[in-house]
Image (cartoon, rainbow, N blue to C red):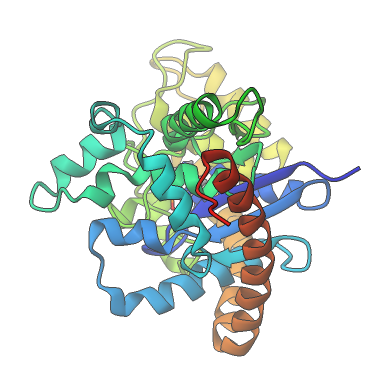
Length: 341
Ligand code: TYM
């Protein structure tokens, strides 16, 4: 029986951070043996925000190297660059005919970008979710491991696939509807920035983001100044989201005993009797985070010296991805009727 296909993409704008790892990469590490996995670097998507393209080459290699350093095995996973697969652009064109201006304008990420960059509201930005849908359905992927911030894009991808099937499928499912996926009880993950304001992000808020490229001292510095408070008012109280975030990070990198120890201290704490020491918790978290990040950083840096190896991975991924994409496109063209001989 053939394996179910899963896919995810990452933009090459800036260094990978622990949010990317937790939201997407970690799921893939668990899936690579049991699923047919596709992971790609979304370089076209990054052009929507007009980055300095002289940085693109390094950015793409870094994302690739960091993913492999995290444990993605290029022998098992098809790792490729979006712009190496022109079939995606053709499918994007067809799906654009099924995407409406009103719904695109209402997309949360679009509205955010308009707020951040009112001088660069380009058509690529507006149709960003359409390109993302094309990325996914070109490989007929069913599951898409992503963080919480991508939930709406996945919903839109399902809508576009559904509309395509309705208009051109003649009763058949030509493009399967993809689902966002996470192992964490199905809940999509959102790692907050260390100051508790918004999500951790590649290109903003650098001192509050833990990058896989950060050196040990930087990790210590960032975690030690992360947001905490005076402690809980009552025993067993609900954690504010910035404290919950520290526990979430701890669950990722520390032992279960360590997490249980601080959970217990938190639950025993109340106003006038604060037995949880956030300073100690942060020190422990910093050391465990260093133990987690340092080997990934070292491996990624070594791999970045080996451009030939990375080129070999990209080319092998490109060939596999194009074979799969052109097969879908053949079916898509036939369904639409743009086949003349
Ligand atoms: P990007 O590059 O912003 O992020 C890559 C992955 O990391 C997840 N992520 C997070 N998860 C938890 N907490 C955070 N703070 C956090 N920040 C980022 C994202 O949800 C994502 O899974 N539009 C996509 C790239 C893309 C894509 C696709 C993804 C293009 N085509 C097709 C899936 C399928 C993006 O900008 O991800």
